[in-house]
Length: 152
Ligand SMILES: [Zn+2]
Image (cartoon, rainbow, N blue to C red):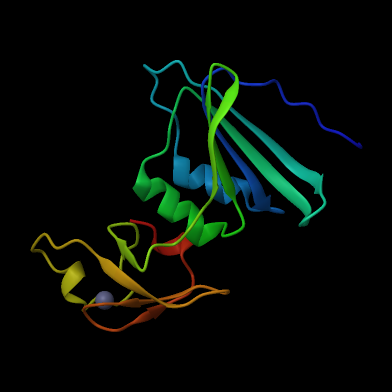
């Protein structure tokens, strides 16, 4: 298939340049759209891409992503770009970018970490390394490089 046609969306978000095979992980981050919302999600797997070789694409109608969701996508799919579509036009397009601190997105894998105790304390990680990403818990210094299994 040389060119894949996905129906354009009127309003919503296109997550493009997702690494090949990572679209289902991105869907896990997005979760199931709330029933009351007029939303549909389309997914294209294994699309030819000049830059990446192969890529996946996820389109979500009528939803713009929260900063926390964008940070989670940046951890799982660091090559992704996010475009906001309004009235069929791209209003904003940018690469996902990890901020120096990741707050509330992941649970610390260290069960003894203070962020996992009963008192409400939001998890907080510093970006210790980039490409590939390694995070470090600010409370217990545990390093994390497997993000999918520790999403909060
Ligand atoms: Zn910790």
